[in-house]
Length: 384
Image 1: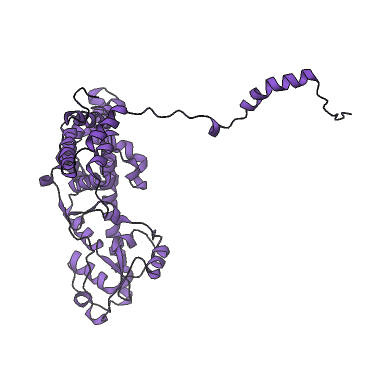
Image 2: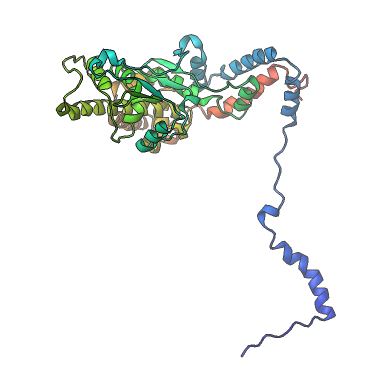
């Protein structure tokens, strides 16, 4: 039988304990207690920003504009495409007022005599509807730049614009400032179907329930995208029939026996529109390597979209033409695989070589951003 016995230290054991204790303790030091390596300071850049602060806001704007322009004056195919998108004369209209359009109840369903009321986003009823429909009541899409296919215009973000220094700091990391604006610009260039644009115009109207209540900032598209049951007013149903299908034969109040058929027509049209919008969004986000902005339903095939861009030489016009030839998601994805296979067969090269094309644009952006600062004299006479 084993028995425990008291420890009676001797002089020798005490000396050994003094010697070994620091070594034993060091083995139990947690990673959080160890000293982490500190990032190496970029002294050249720090001094450059010190020189920057010696100028006023007007100079900052002029210098920032000049430096940003220089970044995109490159022979890299993607940077050439970026530069073209930056030019205002080539870009789409920007809405000055982003309020949602509304169908007039007196025009489309006068016999209902609806009393219009707007429910604010901050009200309990708004949040209750959102939660019931599976919409995040805290989401703030208005904080981001968006492309409105229905209005054929950009909707500006309701946030403060980045200042020149902040924009340059983003470029120095090899990224693009306000990536949501870049994606929205490219979505505009890929939007080609006039019929779907008319459908988008309908679904971008403000949602109204059967009691005539509007929900602030909530589009018809937002409700149809939930794929859940919700109430729709005769106003919006008649508007769809009249404005999109050119059918003025059905008046309000709509007979109950026609409800399911009309709702099915609207649902199917929205499904076609959403598929086109998701594909357009996925292509635009992939172009800027913003995979997190690709819709979840297409995120797994984002690498194929990158190869598709390589096949068209990173040219948005050629990509828009390709989309026009194969407008559905299934047809377009199938055409990508056929074109990739043809390219591999013709060139006897690999997909990795196709993907590499002109090299990473992010490194080019970061390098040229630093060169731009040097050209403006921010690195001093000796470049220090």
